[in-house]
Length: 147
Image (cartoon, rainbow, N blue to C red; front, side, top):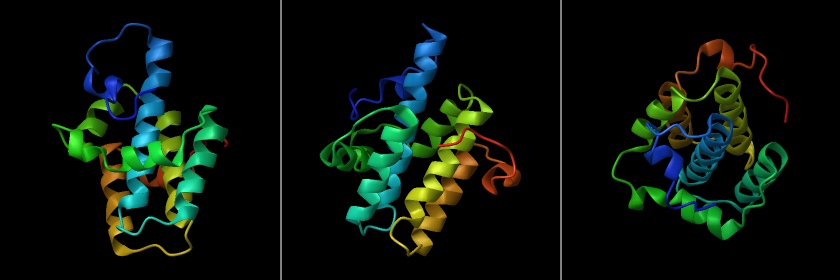
């Protein structure tokens, strides 16, 4: 999987195989959101990287190196559109369970270093808005897949 291209995000209008493309889109969105979360406070902690790796292994069955996560965290250097725009497009293709899963995983990453900074809260709010997450989804009151 190419973490730098984010093919599914840039080709949202092309729907080939819905099951496979949906899984690929979820994978790319989750990697992108979680990787960027570790940089949202400009203080990348090893615990955050380990948490992202564990989540991706548990949820997606994907083993991704710390180096690839760091590349994904800096991927805005390679983008033509902002993360918010990509997520707003992706939201149309993600089901409710996937959006809830992304938000739950993001919470785990932000809490992994035992210190949540203002910039991380701002990042969380941006992601929640872009994914059109409702307050009940964010609070975990709507059941999403367990991980």
